[in-house]
Length: 151
Image 1 (cartoon, rainbow, N blue to C red):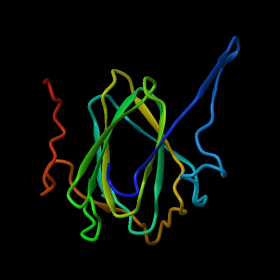
Image 2 (cartoon, one colour):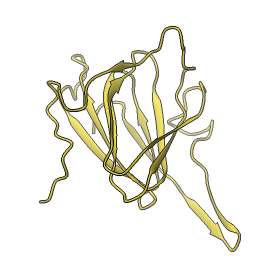
Image 3 (cartoon, rainbow, N blue to C red):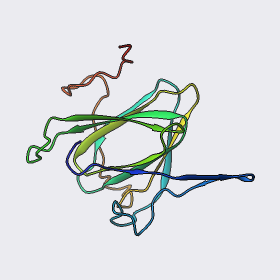
């Protein structure tokens, strides 16, 4: 696993009224600080990525559908430099994925309905000077192909 990446298995508590799932608590090992909470979605087959943050750490939870979240460690000083991790998360695998800053990441909706990710990053979004650096999902030098793997 890429250095600094952490996974928290989420517990779903169902009852006759519905279900409850805690995502991130201030006493969790992965919790650092609160910046904001936002929702992002992708339609089936859509790739959103690549991007990275220089300061912000992300905490992703996919709450609807299934998402393939891919990480690439581009940090030259990291013991896992050049490593790629894939995580299949969502309704069938409820996890929180902690993504450290400077790790390039993106996601693809792999379900037949719109996928929804909730992110609780460590920083506020700065509209005047965003801590977000984008890379084209297909036209780049990253050693990853977003196409579905049949084998």
